[in-house]
Image 1: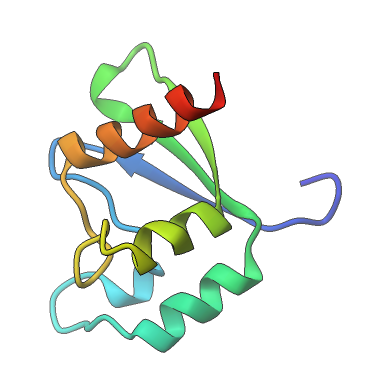
Image 2 (image 1 turned 180 degrees about the vertical axis):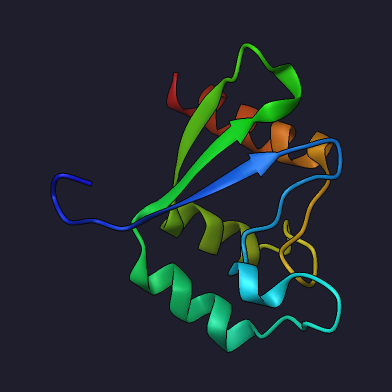
Amino acid sequence: DEQGRRWEVRCISRHGIYFCPSYMVGSGRSFDEEGFLRKLSEIEGYVVADIERFPEVPFWIIPSQQVLEWWKAGELGSDTKISRRKALRLISSLQQTRL
């Protein structure tokens, strides 16, 4: 961004969402917790878009610290992938606590 901070973009689809780096997702690839945590320390956070609602595409800014808290609390799957339903629930709970 204009302040030199780094952001990752992720989409919530009918298949869910993952927060680990893309090189850890796909056939023949494996999740590496150390690499995931390193990535979290290098970025400001995530811009998360709900592409299932296209052409309206709601999005949220999720700080990397929040994703780390979800990880430590066991809210993310073992490879950081969670369902669409769970992702929207976690995001909704953030919005309610900030009101």
